[in-house]
Length: 206
Image (cartoon, rainbow, N blue to C red; front, side, top):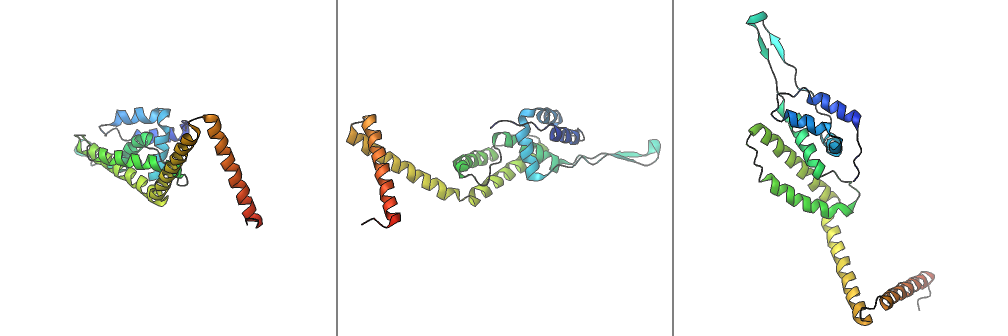
């Protein structure tokens, strides 16, 4: 999949990220969203969550030296947005109309669930954001898999593959593996099958 840069969105997200210097992973966030190669992950995260809010601004309460600064570090929205975007570079959002991705989604779900149970992050705040991102990506893929009836699609593809292999083996037996004779038989079967279908349509099958 070709990476299409979206500098306007990157600029917008980086402006928001700049308000989260309180995050332990702040430098990594800036580096990630600066890199246009990560654009797909950023777009997928925005599509899933919407644009994240800026961190709540700090404010000073009281008079002069006797006052106090109140600082904030809104962990949840930006944290899971960032880690979901990172996940989406490897596990992108797929079209809900393309069943050819069913096997990829199924395989990815196995990997995602395994990775979720093996998160080794020691910082509890970061771990919480990573866990949220994994759960949301798993939810996204699981819903997509169910809505596209992927189990039935994969089963049908397996039957088609098995039937094709059986036919191929039979043709190899008949032709002795001679590719010219083999393809000639395939062409003949295809032609006579077409002729028979055409006769049925015209009511001439007897």
